[in-house]
Length: 445
Ligand code: GLN
Image (cartoon, rainbow, N blue to C red; front, side, top):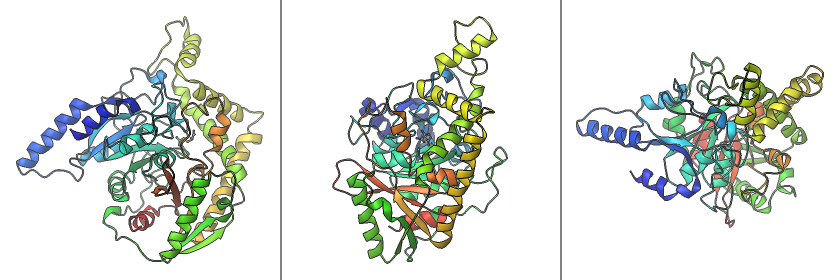
């Protein structure tokens, strides 16, 4: 009830594409009655969750923030969401996002921009912008988002909350609308790491519908001891002095290094040689995968079909022209180009090799240290509309988040207290499958 009141109070922020008010109220009432009768409820009874508009939920609309999925109702539920529903979670609605999760400011949504509750003239980050504000504005306890290149950590950092992206494959992608399949992961946003640990352990693990979610031992993250042992933490010292990073972020990083040192951890400056290649490799590979993944939206099978078309080819072309927004069209064209036969080796093939180099160098650092500390973003949240005409500026701002997705590593954005009027965060990255170690550490901070 309080959450629904918060949704009404913050309607101007454009957080939700759809609120499941009636359904959520009824479920909460049913749980109350069952509890009163002494029934045993699931571990998430009473916990209110928002889902990003890329997560399929049986019988509910899902649009990926796009006109092309207008009117589409999902016939099944994403595995991760189903596992939370089995524990009696209450889903309050689907949150606004960049179209097909392509963007960093939530400005590419068919439903218009979401606003940052810390300053309504600024973006909340993206693409899980609605998800971040849904937690920031107190309209739910935890938000389920997705990350292809930073969509959970970056908006969390812009909104002053925690954002967690697990190892690639830790959570099944079944029922998550695909963007770049070798990058995509479901992730969570919340006010504290304990809540993240709980929903992670309940939704993760092998799934017969996703061959990339292997049968790895799944720790009970929420029950693990908080870890206050001294850790070896690598950080990129060059970034501390870089003019390309906003002063408040550099200050926050330096404070964090000092704070960790004071707590007895060993902070080790390290170098990373490939920062110049991180964003190009990411955008070559993800647009390539997206051009293939989005080919299924053809006007025949799902959502929007052009009323102007007279034959099959025209139906494809017109439906896609009318249904996809500018940024999605740009990326489909880019992706098709880098995969085309004359250019494949020069772009896609090369980017695959760069991805391997990036992964190997990060692995080398994580073989020698427990965590890597780095910024989440080069700047704080920018004014709405400021970057809409400059896609490359937008892409470059993803430099510190795409690393974890390129390498498939778990990473978390942690809010930090500063003098800045706008929220600032920092990032910690851990080795593959080590989200337990990462969560135990940040729960002790
Ligand atoms: N901003 C990045 C992009 O536009 C990341 C988005 C995401 O993680 N979904 O691709």
